[in-house]
Image (tube, rainbow, N blue to C red):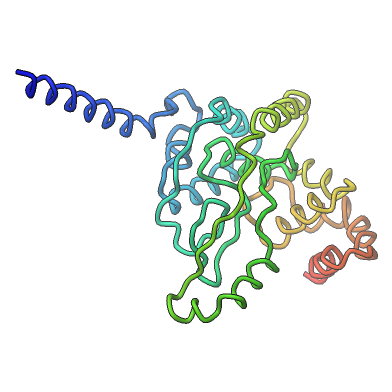
Length: 253
């Protein structure tokens, strides 16, 4: 009888554990989102679904921001990315000597939403980790090159901190939207970033103009020449080498 009791307890434990595992992706009821299908893909574990959904969400424009903010309502929501190929991000454990660098801890859904929101708005609320640099990756590649030749990869363990600061970062993003939702558009955000004194925001906006990540309604050559070309020429005279380089490329394009 005692053995049967232990078996029942163990079976209940396995059942509860299975339910917990299965419910992990059900952290959000996606039917409550305006763009439910895209949000469902965006919060999934499959990297290909995630980045394709993110691009589609950004193409929608400012009306997608409430959905992104809603994803931040549960700062503890976590979904480990799978099948990431050569993606380099703070949650990665391997570096293949090349790849797409995304300096956001994308396993945390709130940070994943912040990644999309910062890309869309050219704002810096604080979601990025700032732990991955090209120099550090190249130094690692040179240092462990013999091992790389043998295995074809490097083992990495990036220090991650932003999930500990999420409450304050999320509040900053929500407060910004509360104060700007009536008049803000991706086009006005692009111009605001260029005229800001924040080099990171300026570089993000320039990258959007050089390598279109999503469509911005109203952005064309005429708007560029009229609204921001003079500012880009001004920024091209800066002492910052990267900003000088990127503004030069943009002006030549």
